[in-house]
Length: 288
Figure 1 (cartoon, rainbow, N blue to C red):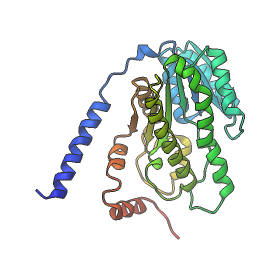
Figure 2: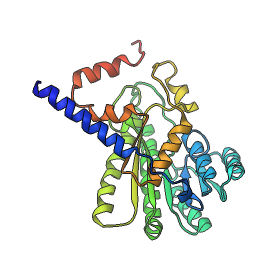
Figure 3: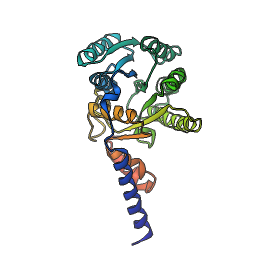
Figure 4: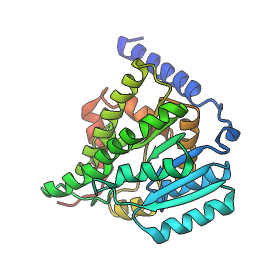
């Protein structure tokens, strides 16, 4: 057996063992009963589905997004699904003061915080880079800097509760594809910053856990609208993605990957760069 093949087989086995260990079912739904949870970007998509799952588990929930009418509908449904409490606060994460304001609202109304779930993203076109620096600057505030602001505001209460920070990220924060340059920049920033914070929390021996969730293409309405004419890649259900995110945060996993292929894609992304880039470019439809 050649050295290359031996290395490949060993890496595959190690990856399979890691997946089996990381994804073993240790989730206890009862642990979320009465848990104090703040979910951002919860008016639709993955955030909305997370709110519903937390509600079924009997959590106390604060949700936030920009559109008040949608938030009210989600909060009402959370109560009907079994949430012990479901409140909402409209907020615009592009505004410098709103991220900390949301955390204060959650802490004041829940008496503390057990889970900070950072899921919100700003809208960005699925298109070739057009040189719009101001849009990228705005997107960095929404997708990245507001995450830092909320984490900074929430850390003191999370240290008191031994709580968890859940970061909803993307495979596009680990590898590059066409048409998403501003979005990819923000997700690389998120992964880099919170990967560092994970080490610092561990070195400080705090009891706060941090979970970074790497997602592939999910069938949210906004995502499907953007990629419809560009790719035929399979999209996976938002409700299942939301549930896996919650399970990973509750069991205090370091990393979470959904769907299955995201782990192997990121594991082997740098092995054959020429063929990797060829596959990526041929996965999208584009006529110059």
